[in-house]
Image 1 (cartoon, rainbow, N blue to C red):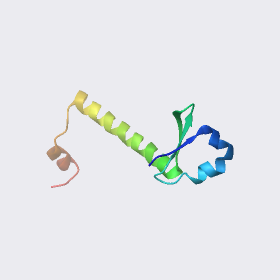
Image 2: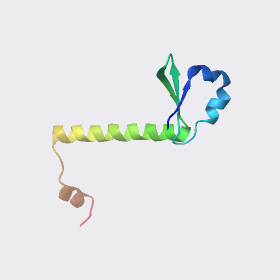
Image 3: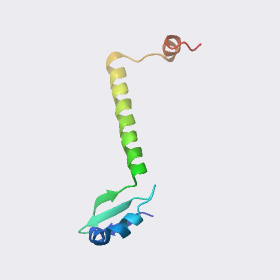
Image 4: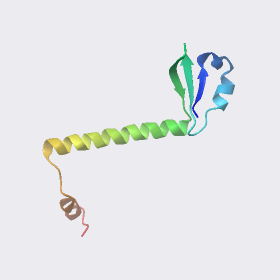
Length: 82
């Protein structure tokens, strides 16, 4: 279950931060609407790595569509796998 708190709870920020754990962010609301998410650094690094990977995959997809795809046999031959 998501951990949702009003932003006014930040007055006692140490309690809010205590609730942030790996895999369990705290979501802050302002005027009853979701506004911020506080993540553990491990989760933040995972998000950054995921975005980087998705960008690289999109770049590869775009390159394949524009320049043509490489067959798996050609990749194996080029990199020495038999």
